[in-house]
Amino acid sequence: MITFYSTHCSRCIILERKLKEKNIKYTEVNDVNEMIKLGLTYAPALKVDEKMMEFNEAIQWVNAQ
Image (cartoon, rainbow, N blue to C red; front, side, top):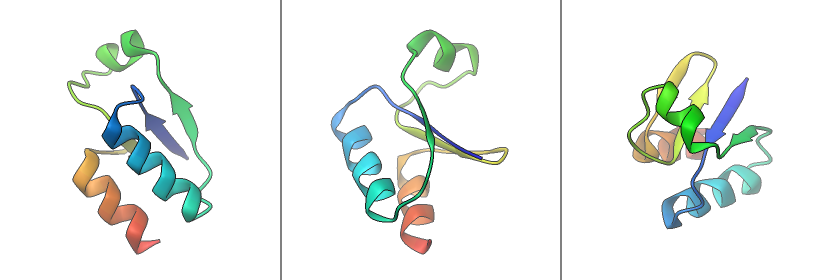
């Protein structure tokens, strides 16, 4: 399961575009309160299974798919 945490910032838009280009299915969460509950202090974030990734790692993961 892939969850994309987004605040619609410029980096969020880039990561979302890359996910769509690779036809990767994901659930988008843009509720800031939910992100805070998870302890996220950055956006975007990508959670793949149980692994949480910041922007750079997420981009690398998407590019490898």
